[in-house]
Length: 148
Ligand code: SF4
View 1 (tube, rainbow, N blue to C red):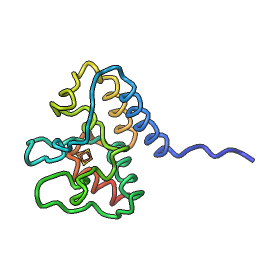
View 2: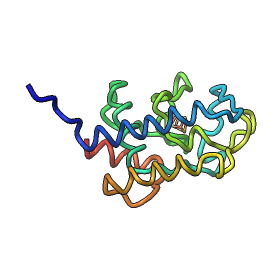
View 3: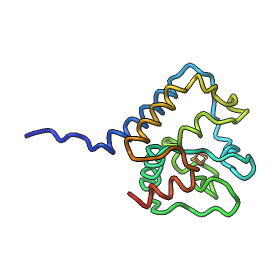
View 4: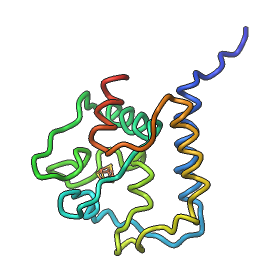
């Protein structure tokens, strides 16, 4: 029997996860200690932007966590931040921006030159999936949930 080829979407999402894994393996000293300060967008004034592949990975992770919709947040924090536990609902699949953020406690932002090749890989996945560049996290994940 012929082996089924993975769908283009599955290949794209595998590439996004490969980018995350490669970032984690980079010898750049960073230590996210789950303080979640960076998840409070209204306080930080910064919201991560996601390419389409990242949004799809996040949406699938949210579904796997038993959620069909993006939770509502009235306080301007990330909708993926659990209001009671204060933990990220999709930490293992959190977007690239959440991994390379500006949190001083974690070591500050990555320099672009340290990760530019990975950014380009995410941009290629975005183009292959018909995306048109980064989109703010809440809208990006909501759209990916609606499509999946
Ligand atoms: S996806 Fe997770 S790590 Fe990223 S901002 Fe939201 S709660 Fe924080």
